Image (tube, rainbow, N blue to C red; front, top):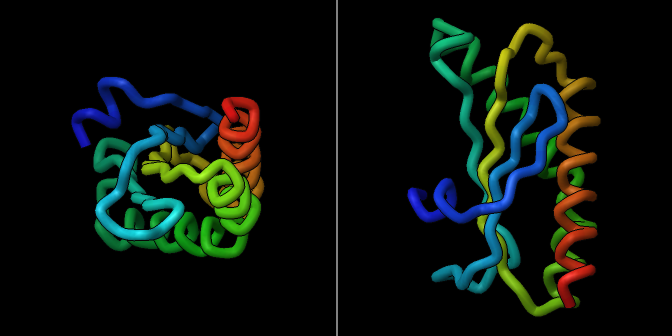
Amino acid sequence: MDELFRSGNKEFEYPVLAVWKVCDLPEEVPCQAGFSVSKKFLKKAVDRNRVKRRMREAYRLQKTPLHEALRNADKQVAVLFITVKTDNTSYDRLHGKILLTLQSIARKIEDSK
């Protein structure tokens, strides 16, 4: 986790920040994803969990293009999605922003071939 923050790449689409890094993962999967919501902006655990559920669902539905790009490049990536300033965390907004970040990561991986 420290290495991800220290030397990882960042993609930002308000309110979603994705920190990602191409690395060798212990499992044979193209991508490992994590999700985080700051306690600073959402005090109640139930609210943080709701936002994390929405982000996980948006990722689950849209991960295929990223996974295909990773398989084609024969790479693995670790990515952490973080919400910042969670004033508007509707599912539709998160869905669109996670799609944009995944497309940006996939483009950068394809360009690095």
